[in-house]
Length: 284
Image 1 (spheres, rainbow, N blue to C red):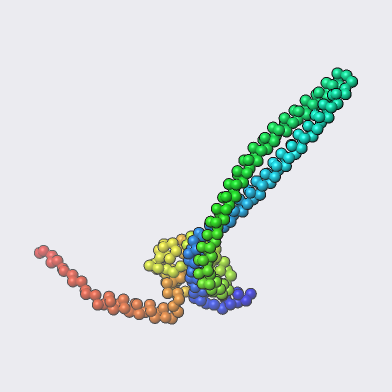
Image 2: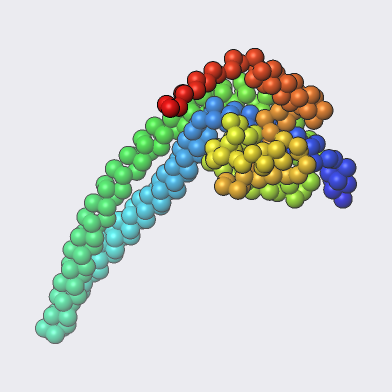
């Protein structure tokens, strides 16, 4: 409510000037960010990449432990099978008939097959273990290299930020202060236009009879309306808010300036030599 009350007390000219000043300050903030270039994005990309690599390393380490556990389990199974084989072989010495002997022989053969199967599985797990170890070493080396790159980018960004942060903070405060004096409807329109504009310009002056944003020609009557500062005008081509190039000059001073320009133009016109016209006599 307080903001709306303050805005309603401002004239159209004061609103236009506030928007123009807001645009100037926001453009300066944009320039500072451009000075930093792509560094913030590069830092963010590196941080995301390193986070992804760390997740991958964690998965590889888990896979490594799973393979080691699987190998250990298979070795235990082999030991258990050998114990059973020894037991069955001892029992074969005390059998009472061929049927018992054949049954124990089959048990021994089965345990030998189990040992062979476990040894095959162990070879497979060891092969996977080697592959995972190689991949893990590469990932660790890669993350080490990317971390060094990140440190360099961080230092570079911190250095540039330190040089410009104070100026940016001051400009941000000014931007916020001016924003509070602009009515919400206009501020929302300004923010929307600025967000859609490639160069971030929402408020532009009329220069050389054209919009300062899209450079399309502005009709003379429209230019006069803009110069009079009686209403908020927008470009019919790009939708930007239009102001006259002398918006920072009070209207009274502008009118005096325009009157002086008009008088100077008339005096210059009067001083121009008149063109002599030659009449061609008609033949009788």
